[in-house]
Length: 495
Image: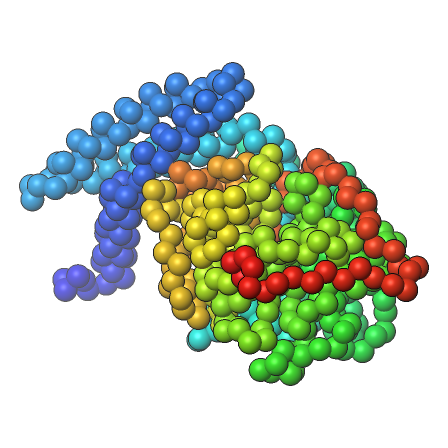
């Protein structure tokens, strides 16, 4: 570089530097590629699907061949006199392993849909940003800044570039298309696709910047507002279809505030008919309910924050209830310091109890670690952890911190389990990566499905009908003026 005297010389130096960086990254990729993870996934798919996964043996043979070549090249590169061509061979082998990983894992029969719904959003500032002062990543991405905040605290909700897109799965040639582009740059969130795939729910601020539940026809993008107009200070969000087509959602209609910050208005669970009528409160809390979804048996899974007489940084409990609000009980985490919070909990298809959730802290928002939980293994601390992804064969320590996932990578949002081993999820694998949609598994493979420069991609949902869980009949009788009260000895049980 010291001998450069003109622009041509500078260009040659830049090209050499770029080549060196590419080769260095390729070498690191080859050294760190988890061949065992890929082999485990291939063998699992072969055992699970048999003839529906016909090329398993070809993938395994190719993996073995590339692995032997990689061992030879890495051995040569460990010597001081390694030839230059060994670096190029390493780059080729690294690319070959990544290509094989995509081919083998995208042949998964669970990916039997042509398109998925994705929320596409331009973050505030650098889309690759890995931290935002001491506030985590949520507000930068269009989410509440911290776990104690609801949607009413998100600033500038009328100044976002975002839309709901229908995007093709890898290997499908059709172009992506925009299904719903909100008016006036309004922020979108909380997509829930109906069981038959013909419509979806989404939350969006109205002209007064009060959040409302909208329903969108997936055939033509036509939308209608379901929650009531013109009620000051009331925000409605986090909608969820029930198996009988009624709708659950979170609302601040009770006009309560968080005890440590009364300006943070609390959201609780409400139910309404499919046309937006018949609104009824079904949860009565001191603090927030969050992210309801439907379990495989028809019950509702949701996160609840308790505050009174508790160390409130750590006391968000996964709860279950009947759709009518009865039988509210702990699903995971009562009397536990870990996890601080488990957002976006969603049932694993075909499994009676296992769920996926994003584990995070209090003052760091909803971005966090992807964890599989099963309450039949235990309900306290990390007793019920099936696995943190990635984290094969590594125990999960139930740390007691305000921000337990602040410095951990990868970071995740919005899991969509396909079965107990494979999930779609929004992910930012490293501090320098974009937020994209990934196929991940319990064997520690992370396969990028889609990312777009300058944007973050969130809330992946297979765009197809899905099984409707059983309908649990209502047990409440609104016309009656009496009630049955249960008394429980607080000293019985684990608390």
